[in-house]
Amino acid sequence: MSFKKINLSDLTFNPFTLIGKDWMLITSGSPSAFNTMTASWGQLGKLWNKDVFTCYIRSNRFTYEFIENNSCFTASFFGEQYRDALSYCGSHSGRDCNKAENAGLTPTELDGCTAFEEADMVFVCRKLYKDAIKRDSFLTSDSLDDKFYSNDPYHAQYISEIVAVYVKEK
Image 1 (tube, rainbow, N blue to C red):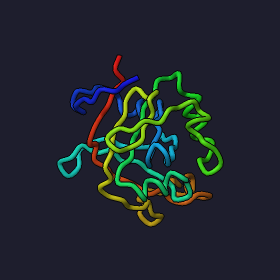
Image 2 (cartoon, helix red, strand yellow):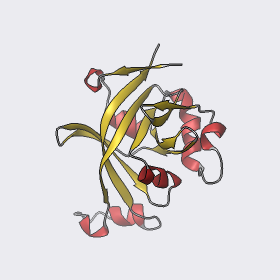
Image 3 (cartoon, helix red, strand yellow):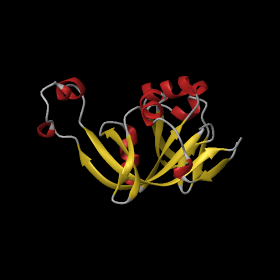
């Protein structure tokens, strides 16, 4: 299956459904040495006069090492028929197995970044900014910090420019 590069402004979708309900794979590295992780947190918008995508990755995730060591990453979006593959990638570590292969996904290169042939849409992202979620920056008292970080490290936030969008050719 091949991809067609399109303009981001030509897309119409609900970002809350696309990211929060449908999920995505965040992938970094080369097709021969990469890792991917399932994610359901992220934002899309405009910042610094650029189209941006923001994702969140904990430092204990294997993908974190790849994101840190590469200037780009991809966010790949799939049809519902790949829900089991995304579930697998979200519940296994690339340190212990070849997640993509075990999930039946085929790595491919788009603009120097790794994505998957089975994806319906891929954002190619160039990192612009990184910061950490911090305990003392929470502004509410509704226990978000305790709920999401009592047993896990805080997320790193990556704000990235969407430099290309690819969709599966029909």
